[in-house]
Image 1 (cartoon, rainbow, N blue to C red):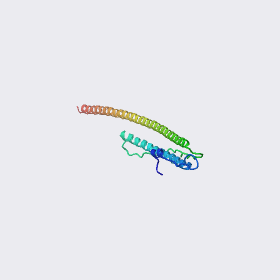
Image 2: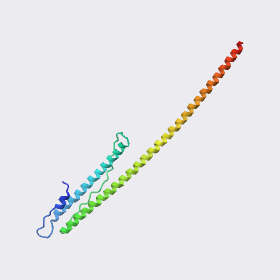
Image 3: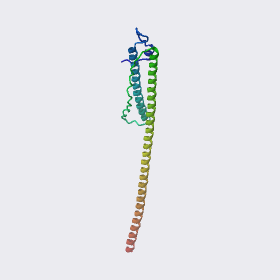
Image 4: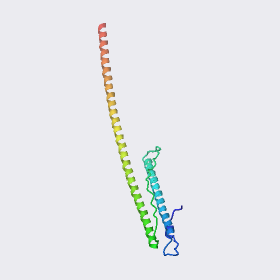
Length: 190
């Protein structure tokens, strides 16, 4: 089914009924069903495009932060929107009721778009909050690891300094001991 354009809606002409005043009720009903179907299709396409845009923006942010590792981006969560209830049109149809039905269809469309935008803004805000939380956790982990490594480095430096001191004292004691032995040997020869 081809999607309706704005011109299709504005230029639509209905057949007049021969035996009563107004338009052919079935023709008006079918047209309004097409309008509702088109609006629903556009909303679904709009939602898919928003999800693709969010995924693309996330990937661009990852790449711009220097994270060039290939990452499988998870499929965006699919938000199920209930299919619109197709209204059944009964009763006498006159130009005013057709106009009011078009106004109703426009109002329903506007509500769906507004709800979609609100939901989109909510999802984006939640994603940003989660991103900030993940970044904060990663920063905290990095700081903890660096602190631990710094402590280990200080401990190793202290051990190295202790070993150097031990080596120096050992050499000094050994030299003193050898000198005393040499002195004893020298004294015994005299």
